[in-house]
Length: 173
Image (tube, rainbow, N blue to C red; front, side, top):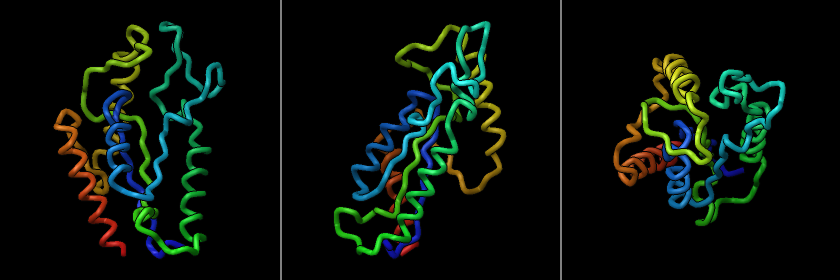
């Protein structure tokens, strides 16, 4: 057992918005933390759970149905369970072993997408933007979510989030 309560941090944003870069920078400053990338859980076409978009000859990969969320939730639960079963004490190399950073998609502000492979023409306007607006409406009143401006300086964003995580860790010890 780590002796510290688990802390789960979510980094969310549109594809290619910098969330994985931010996650990697945070991981470099938080020895022992674990990261889980939601992209690892995308379903493969032609999985019947995917929503086809016939006019684009493509699938909607910007909705939760495009992900194996049961597998992701199981992986998070496995990590949480390990937090209570690990009897060794923390070492300097795993100081933040009670921190899990989840890196997932959703966007809160319109940004230019430069995505490889490129989106199908019309995909952003027809799928990505409407899905993000719907998601924003669902979470806008939650007080446990801090919204960051993805157009701000990336180093400053990293330092802000890092300070917030370190503060949470101090409060939980």
